[in-house]
Image 1 (tube, rainbow over the protein chains, first blue to last red):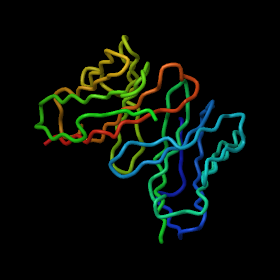
Image 2 (image 1 turned 180 degrees about the vertical axis):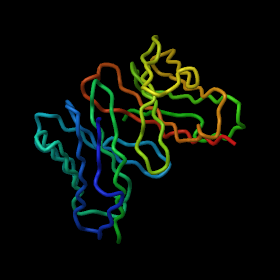
Image 3 (image 1 turned 45 degrees about the horizontal axis):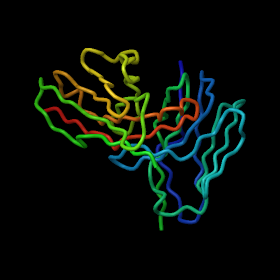
Length: 110
Length: 118
């Protein structure tokens, strides 16, 4: 069966450090992978998209890698700030539909 | 940026009643809208995909007679939960894909609608 697994439910880090989140998948052949941010009681907000032929993508303090051999994506938040505290979801595209992981909740301590 | 508006943001209803949730794309045309349901601390589960002017495609295990979806225009899709029961209480979120962006992937999400059935 298809699975999308994100590492640990929660990640607590000190302000200024780098947060690294993992997304592993099985039985998918995604054309692209996306990362979203979700705040409590709100809808997800798109952050980054990386295609199957791309190894790395950056946007400001965010970096995403995509290894289709390992079937894994890593999401990095560098120089983290308390405002980065949220749940981060990875999503895989399959047939133009998105399937989501359960998310990793990041808390950045001041 | 593209904005998707969902209404109502929260609703409480009695068991057995029907509830309608609206999803509007405010500044773009959405050929495809998706409806998700999210239970606490769980991932978003796709319920159905709706294309403007045609019938919605439901995911396995989602009752199409219970969750009625209408996508009457390029800017409006509605989800009606018919004869709601307490187990239908959840966070319902719509998302839209802009016309001409089938392959770019980005979805624009509404703010979600919290349904509580008493």
